[in-house]
Length: 353
Image 1 (cartoon, rainbow, N blue to C red):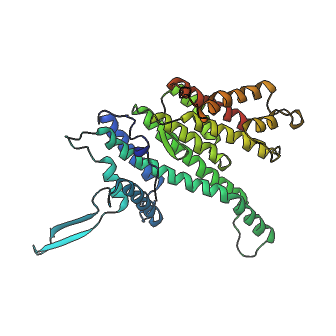
Image 2: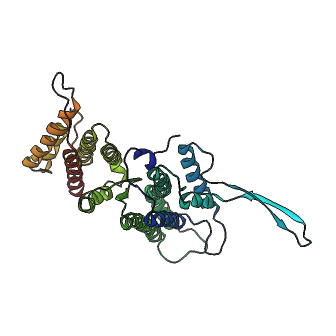
Image 3: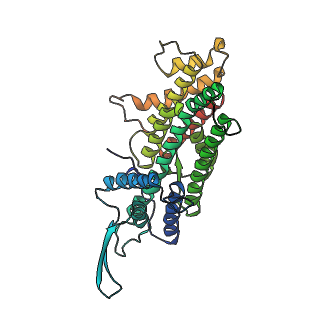
């Protein structure tokens, strides 16, 4: 199975030209964060087998993408002296958390030609670790309503036996909020580590991506990713991530994917509000649903026209064959504008719900 990793997405996008103290510190800090996310030992010093299995899963996914069986050597063998001076051969396998740590914190060879690739391959480890944790948190959030209903039914049934004081539903909600808050804190820490290391990177919704403008990242991108983290907006998140990856790797038509993300958001709003009739033929028809007075004028008429202009000028001009005319395209600045504008529109649409 293919795994989407940072090192591959940004293979042709140079980020690092040297391995300095800042990079060494950053990589060590990412390992420490991974250990916080998936501690191998609990407070009593007992091994948490479930977390060791997750380290193995992350290791195997990353090793598979790099075409190796191990990220670092697992097997060890040495001879130690026994009480009578005899040789005692000792061998075994390092745990996967140790192997991953050795891979990430290893120093680059002095004659290494491509430091950029070396660092990206190790940054990919923390991307997979945080992505796995995000998937677990999302699954817990999806499961919460069912768990709350089960707890409510059991409480109403008044089963006999010893009961713990307090409302079990409140406890479940508190635990879930604690889980989400802890994960948000871990993501914030990772992004702050990137900032302090001078790496223009940011983690959002499963992916580490380039953040070229600190103000745009803070005021536009970060709030956008927070809003679309809910599974309802999954397709919006996927297409916008693709737009950014294509922009950063100088691939074709990143603005097309930004417009797809915006169109999905418009359709989702129409669906959630119950305005979709089923005979809409494109983005303009869905915009009509949002502008319609009978639907409460979710958008003002002038806002609807601005949205239509976006699709006419950005998506339509790039999405159709030019025939004998010059091939259409956007400059880097125009591409940034198209992506940031789509993000801003999605933000205001979601916030109005």
